[in-house]
Image (cartoon, rainbow, N blue to C red; front, side, top):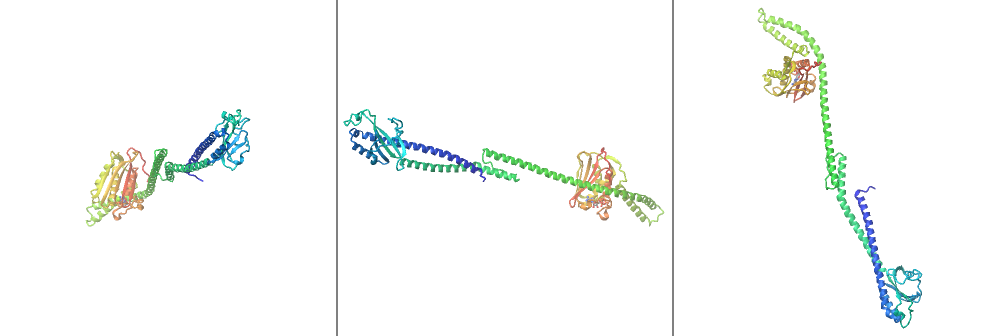
Length: 526
Ligand SMILES: Nc1ncnc2c1ncn2[C@@H]1O[C@H](COP(=O)(O)OP(=O)(O)OP(=O)(O)O)[C@@H](O)[C@H]1O
Ligand SMILES: [Mg+2]
């Protein structure tokens, strides 16, 4: 059986109190018994003395009937069991119990042995040692008091000469009183003491329980509930501090401990959250790198094919362009044929520019690298496009990093890339929107970047892997689909990268990354 703390404490205190109070009551009852007994002995002695004194003259006159009458009257008082006169020889001269008159008493009996202890009887003794308590023939507890009747000169000189002058003691007056009254008083006192002790014990136990519950059990229960909550993971709870004692201090310490635990858990959660975000970011970066790699491989194979075709077409095209130009400027040419020849020249020029674009894409045109400031090239590219009606309602935000280092690049090619990206952004916003241009250096200082963010239509997920392919366009007749593929080839030729991030309906960000001037970087294989 599991006893709780308060029951154990109450039981222990109750037992200690009960034992203490029982001992105390036992001592009090013992004291009272002794006092009552002394009082009974004194009364019995006083009665003996009174009888001896009041019968003194009748004794001297040897008026025994009168003596016996007085003794009988004294013995008729309430509580007196028996009074008898015993001669020196042990013969009962008179007794209020008539039937024992004239009989001899046993000196060894309880009534006589306090004086007749040795060979010679005691002549004088204290009232306590002259008394004895015993059970009489009816079984009742009685107190016997023996009083010596001493010989006096008057006795031996009396007319009757009844006693010789040598005798010291003439007889004994034996008074026997009932102790029933004293025992009844004692029993009543004992019962009262027991009842009082029980009531007091009950009251003490109740008040002790009450105070223990208020001072110990309630704060302990609160602490216990709190610790259970904490163990179950509820770190927001706290325990009310109810006192400034040790339990109050304990509650304060618990609250402090819970606060520390809560703080530690929050830090752990934050740490886990950050870790999750970092993992997500790294995963995204890895995906981008993988996509870039796939794109590079794809574009590399396309580049080889395109380069071959472009070379083959370039030579006949040059011939067509030269001869058609010559024919067009020939004065002998029939004026009616002149527009046709001019169409041939124009279309051939268009074909030549496409072929040039393809050669740029396949990196057949080596860049003429010179140190240049990227913002300056950006501004030149912007100047070329913003006057077009396409850009009239577009807000342009420039966020150029201060003191951007120079980059080794081909001015014309770089301008071409930026124009391609700006035009794409403008076309994606269909005339209105926000264009944000940002430049900066990557932490570590190995490369710089220029990003062009538009608030246009965005690129669907399925197109992201194709936009750098030559001839991939969503612009029907208006686009050749060479802008991004050419830009890609140029940037790769500079040892850099082009990245893209896009969300349909929100916008697109193209980022050009270029290695910094003075930093030797191998061109990216594509
Ligand atoms: N900023 C952009 N916003 C939305 N889509 C874009 C963006 N840039 C490029 N694209 C998509 O990528 C495709 C390929 O672009 P690319 O510049 O290579 O060709 P084009 O713009 O269609 O034609 P060209 O550049 O030859 O005039 C575009 O048709 C368009 O669908
Ligand atoms: Mg384009």
